[in-house]
Length: 306
Image 1 (cartoon, rainbow, N blue to C red):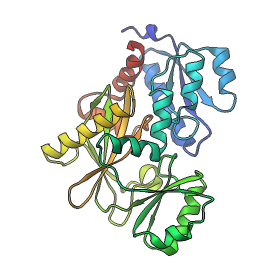
Image 2: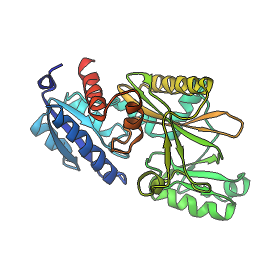
Image 3: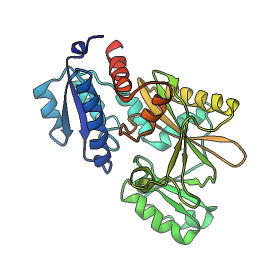
Image 4: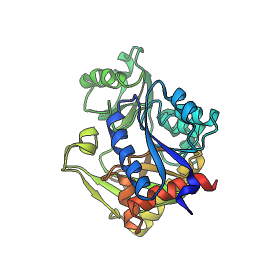
């Protein structure tokens, strides 16, 4: 395919969510790749004027590299649909569904994909009875945020109230899940097919929070993950099924935990994963001989072929 067939491509990055800085980094990496590939690409730093900017400039296509609220949750996707601008990401409805961890887990559970039990809270609720009835340790997280912002490991009821307050800074809706001491995996999915599994290994006593993802150099990423053939096939199959039943398209990343007994639990489906030089999707694609530039081209081409 000739790069000119894509027309003028707007890379949407930045945004107003707590993940703005990561989005800017991811977006710049994607933009640089498109330019190297000969695509007529340019960037739009998304803010409250994005509708006006898109209407005025009317790009031929958009490559969304926004993370978090108002970027990964169907808002920008709906705007692009209204403006009839095709885009290289999952559609609006599925983006909204997967961004909300409660909705997403309910659907995954209904289709037989293993997920953990959870307790839903609203930040304005009286949590005293819940605090007294919980078993510990717990994972407390906002239901519609990414990059592990507002996520806490809670060892006892005395720390739970503070963890709920922290999560409430990022979302008015909060989820409590049993804490799983085990292994963490990410499975990128490209065009409906799972790529090699990545295992995320943090130092003992730490968990994969924002600092571990983007600031520390002590986190290890093992690709392909050291799993036996049966478990590799299982987790890749679960990722492909999660991608399908949630209505994803083109690309995504599905995250899992494995407990000490070997059981896998799907954590979430990310419709716009990170695309920095150290992100997991490019790392996995590289394992099958797909360079960063080739990966970006493939994602954009998928949106053209539909």
